[in-house]
Image (cartoon, rainbow, N blue to C red; front, side, top):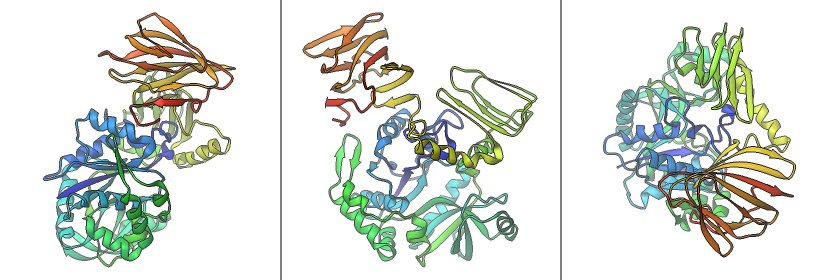
Length: 470
């Protein structure tokens, strides 16, 4: 049976400031209303005779994965949590061990969570070809037929034809310079390495054991004590951390003698930069892509994205990327957007948090937006979903005032449990054990004013938590 495996471990730094560590690009709605992760899941779900998709993701993103699956009505085949990032070869090994536990003949369709495919019919045909090759024990990569000389992708040189639309892989090629990429395009025997693969799960583990045995051993050790936690599968951190950090390309595909490629032209993009997003988006008559509240005068060839609550205006500019968020703004030439990583590196070096979190932070119970901060105080807008509850907790360094804007909140404060209605408020003293719960059918919105000597998110002592964070 065919088991889709969606790899969702990327941090998406090249799409900063919209993409951040706690909400990377695969979970953002960049093209249309659904996220790239949701589109990947639905694309896999549309294949014939397919099993529920397996997702391998960071522990940081587990609730986001669960919520986005629920929003599109897809049953998960397992959400495997990576305690540390160890690249694609170990991640795929975990997925293979997971599906083989219930299906000894499993075939894996491995897909990154953050890719765009516009022609899904062509993709389905390519999967059918790859399935035939996988039945013959080939490990199949999907190669994207290039339509221009791209220097940002690795390439695959195809060798002898194998039938079923596939070819033996002659060699993998690192990202080339422009002259080399133009030669590859002219020769017509090269394809972009998409990072998508299809093979039998056991065949992959066999090849991994042959060419990268330390990775397989670490994955097996980590999986041996795997445990279920709500909808998630947790593995042993120490064992998995011992795995070498290596990609499937280096660990297996470049070494095996059974590597094949199925070329496909399916409107593929890895949305690897703001310029690539501009190139796949619809433009107006001036070649602009506007999102949000934008006014442009004498502006051409630009991508302008405004945040929810602010107007962005441009005058007399060309080929710019302007990305506005509540706490950061990026302005760059389209031909320099690959350098946004330098900004992220400087934020890290300075000990800042703008590369980690948005001002609005999502939690399994809802979200909070830090709408104001100053010396010894912070103001947050908190939204709690129906039926959800914050953890039973206390703080060592701050007190809190809560004002309900809409809905009815059930408040626990030490020994008291009471309802707080719209326009009512309460005070949570420093050190008090407290919780906020929404037992209603509509979201609860409240304003929280924190005061104290330290207001960091790590000043939370969780005593009980339905989300397993205690």
